[in-house]
Structures are given as C-alpha cells and as structure tokens.
Image (cartoon, rainbow, N blue to C red; front, side, top):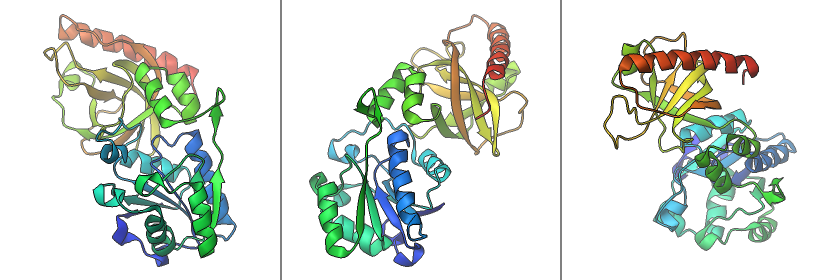
Length: 313
C-alpha cells in the first residue's frame, strides 16, 4: 500500500483508474470494512486501484475542541488498511483551514483533481466538508455533473443498530472484549513503538517491551494473555496495563508492558501490534519484588494454558 501525506502529494498520475472513499475509519470495524470492500469492488470494474482518504487527527478535535480517544492510531490504522487490501491511503491534516473547505471544494480538490477518481464510495452516515454538508445526496449530484460514479455502502448492524466507533470505544473501556471484537471483526488490539523503560522486568527475570501507543485507547488495567506481532510472526505474550504499584508511587501514569516468553533481545524502536485474548488478573501491589516475580511465573503458566485453547491469529 502506498501512503500519500498532505494535499501536495495528490497527483492523478499516482493512481490507476481509482475509486476512492473518505472517512476517519477509527478502528477499521465491520462497518468500515463494508465501505472498503465496496470501494475495492468499484475499482475492480475498471481494473483500477482503491484509495482511502483519511485524516491525521480526529476532526472532532477541531470542531468540538476535544477528540475522543482513538481506537487505532494513524500507524495502526495504516497497518489495518493495508491488511484490508487497500492500494493507496491519503493522509490529510484536519485543521481550521481544512474545516473551512466546502464540500464541493473538497470533492473537486481531492477526488476529481487530486486523485482523478472514476468513482467515489461514501458510508451511509459519512459527511465531509464545511458544516458536514458533503453527504450522499450532495455527492451524487456532484458526481453526476462531473461524470464520476457515486455509490453508498449500507450500514452493518448489530442488535438492529449500526456498528459505530463510539460504541466500540465504550466496550473497550469497560473491558467488554467479546462485544468489541464482535463489532471490530477482529480481536481488540493496540499498536505502539517500543520505548526505553527502567529495566525492572529484566531485573526480575522477565524482560518487557514498554509501548508508546500514540494515544490509542487501552483496555482496563490488569494483566492479559495476548499475541504480539514481531517480525511478521504472532508470538504468545503477557501484557501488563497499569501503574506498576510495586515500584511506583501512587498517581504514576499508566504504562503498557509486553513480555514475550523466549524473546530476550533489545526491542527498542520496533513497532509491535498486540492482540488481547483474555484478562488474567487485576494489577496489584506486592510487598517484595520477589513476590511479583513469583506471580509473573504463575501468569506465564496461565498464558501457556490459554494459548493451548486458542488458534494463532
């Protein structure tokens, strides 16, 4: 998948008979997948390429002054879009200048002149442009005037309601992994770059990778069984989300630490995707580091039992 960043990167010669869509696509859930599938299907009519236009920041951060926590950061979103078979992703800024662009100006500048789209797909409730005037009715009129085919993607329902990123965020925050997974169409996951920690895991005999998630939403604090994707392979992993109360004073910022049994090398700077399988226990304070080490050994045994029950992603 090729990634294009900013309006200056848009040149029609970069795309082959493209069909495009636009949206935040936070989470790449089943509703989003329906839009992506429809975009790819439309592009195939001309043996062309699919193009996703998305934003580096959530528009609500500008429009409402506060953005929701993201299910998927931009790097994670790009991984999932490529995995979904998208050919091109266009990353645009969303600031006051972009907010003021009318729907017609946006569609002309991005779809017609920037991408050279032969077709455009819009989700059933998607909007773009100033005051969110760029709905499906607008786009169909716009496309008819310019000879560009416009299609819509129907909603994907759960319990007779459309799947939405906001409902998934709430489920993840409550630790309702089964519900979130059913709407995502994949396990709950986080994605981050390994940053330097204090090395306490290694001192205990269980080296960990500390992840910077770039603002991604985390499940509730606790110790989880999961899978970590490293160098193209999914490996069993223990994931600790919490404040390390055995070592840190009250009020410490939460961290995400990943222990991958059998991996003892320095992972600093690498990007790791972690999928959650099951919560093993809550985080707690231990009187001595040795007591924590013994608990981690038991957690590893529980991880091994859980891994025997599930399939590799």
